[in-house]
Image 1 (cartoon, rainbow, N blue to C red):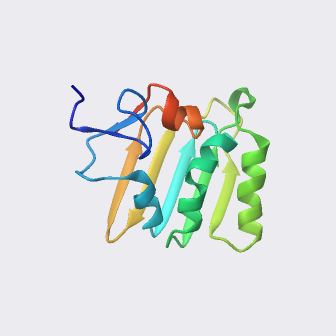
Image 2: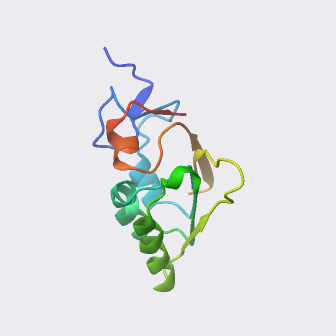
Length: 141
């Protein structure tokens, strides 16, 4: 039997894969992103496959600022995801993308989402990739 305190990280995910624990009942990451006033994401790496899972929800959000910080270690962040977010920024969308310093290994997986007078923070093991968000066994709180 599935633990009722665990929810799929993304709505279409499975409870035996990438999950989030400790979230309020009815929490959905994608709708939280859509309703956000500001979003900050810090990831060890980003893949275009992960960005494509969340992009439309961020582009359609109320956020006045969406900041994304990726690591450079082991050359895992795909240039395509950087270019895609940079293009949104150049088109006047509220996006900002940066690479963390290459000194040391930048390894966080953190989402900070402000909205509706509240804020939430998700800290976990999933990187911004389709595998991390949907297929791997990952957990965030």
